[in-house]
Length: 207
Image (cartoon, rainbow, N blue to C red):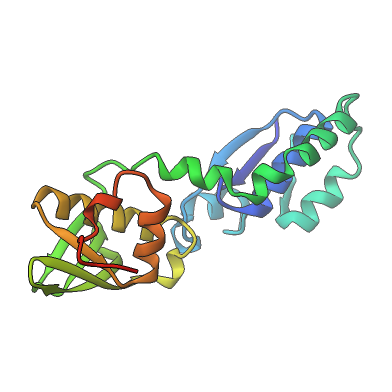
């Protein structure tokens, strides 16, 4: 059975999985580490750290979508191929509205992996292990906390890290009985899009 080295967040991996489904080819999805420099197992198995990489039944290796697609073009399509492509088109609105991303936001990483740290009364930082993922700066104004600016490690943008940070920060402030003034547009957008946090906004703050 072919083995696909891939990651769910990778759009190129997603395209290959869809094509394998249309062709009716069963495969093993092998997960890889998020960063190329961490993929020692993949390099040992295939000679590269690129995803997606497909290892065919005969052991031949195809790296990247172009090589994989050229290989798959030689395969016989299943009787259901056209219907699968049609259903793929039917679900375009869900993909465009980022339904997977919205669902993933509901699943929080294990608490022992993410760590919220408050630094010098100036900012909250989100850490995983020895790496700082994101931070939000703040200042105190009477009895409210003014959330001023959110920043995510550029390499992690688009992965929901900022939203996880703000959720943890707001939960921490709620636990301390505080209120917030969301001057940061990112925080404002989060509060508007997530039920249950509007009551944290200081009554004196009017937009």
